[in-house]
Amino acid sequence: MFPNSSNLGRPPFPLEHQQYFINLPVNIPPVVFHQQFNSTATLVSGNLANIPSVSPPPFAYRNDSPVHTPAASTSFRGRKRLKEQNVSYEAKRQRFHSPHHESISANRTVPLLEDHRRSFPGSISSPLFQAHYISDLTGCVPPLREASFPEPIETALPVAKDKLSQQVLELFQACQQQVYDLNKKELCRTQLQREIQQIFPNSRLFLVGSSLNGFGTRSSDGDLCLVVKEEPINQKTEARHILGLLQKHFCRKLSNYIERPQLIRAKVPIVKFRDKVSCVEFDLNVNNVVGIRNTFLLRTYAYIESRVRPLVLVVKKWASFRGIKDASRGTLSSYSLVLMVLHYLQTLPEPILPSLQKNYPESFDPTMQLHLVHQAPCTIPPYISKNKATLGDLLLGFLKYYATEFDWNNQMISIREAKAVPRPDGTEWRNKFICVEEPFDRTNTARAVHEKQKFDMIIDEFRKSWQRLRDRKDLNCILPLRATIQKR
Image 1 (tube, rainbow, N blue to C red):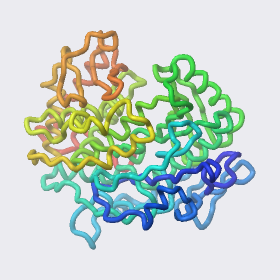
Image 2 (image 1 turned 135 degrees about the vertical axis):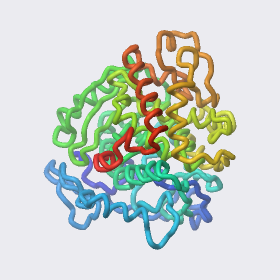
Image 3 (image 1 turned 90 degrees about the vertical axis):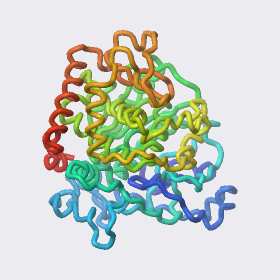
């Protein structure tokens, strides 16, 4: 994809310093793996010769231009979509109703590809990433996986008997992020990391956010975190300077591959750009490591209860359609919406989710070294709730809770505490209309909602949608199902 990436299958570091990369699956339900590598000692000793080789990604680049590799089944041509993606919706939905399996399973939709490596953890010269690690295989949340691990046991998604629940599940199955979507982002991350290391040799680029936390959709952008050193950096000065250098590098050296690199001077500055080959939009930050931590916290929440992911996806799609999911325009961010759904599920009379940070403080310690963060989800068992509410009931309850019950003037949403807590008195929270606590650094993730007009619009959408859905019990009355699936 980039000039310094002639050998796409080669690890981005010299072999003598290369740690094995661990495969992170998507769309995989909580499982217990039955066996480890044939030789665990191989991993401990770091003998890379015994680790299975990795097939090159299905793209080749010659003379600064992408060319199609005929043997690759997952390649795409420039801006065009895959032929598979042009198949009619009715044909595509057959994969969710396999005649060979009566139950609907979370990972029936897309098979795992065994020849792709994920971006966590990796190896750089920093002391932060200097040892070999083996994923804990005893837990039930999808662990990070090496290619030779066996296929996981399939776990059924929630049973949907009523019409509204069926609609929620249908939307989830059609719009959830697929392996193909993740591989496009991962290919760009891998090649971009090699380019960035021409400027910052000891840096490491991580794919974070919805792409890895279990809540991604087919249309999700890619979030990237560039870690340049172990210590925190000043986001207003040092981070902006680094991003400015990268923006110039993208414009001067990578203009054939990267489109519209733009430096956004926000509280956490980012460079926004578009990969011309995959047509994926990316947001790149520097050393915002809280994003790595919350990625794996949310991933754990996503998989410990089977109703969480479908509910989050339909809420994100609804909020986007209603025009209240765009922090750049003064409404809610996708991250804030996810936290709002988790908070609602924690605060039901019979909770569907616990506070993971309270129940497993050692697994989600905000001071934990980054190279250990990915292990936490592997140790958390499923949460068994006595609450048997359907997806339709939970969607209605979510809308009602924030339309009529939550005290916006005096309360703050906190999944860390698993309850609504009094607003803090700090400057971060004063004169803010919506307060959603970031579970690690405890900042306000909804600080973008700073206008009374936008706040009123958000609450009005909650109220109107709750009333319509309560009366009609049809998702189409608040979110056109067919159009949303086709747009995805």
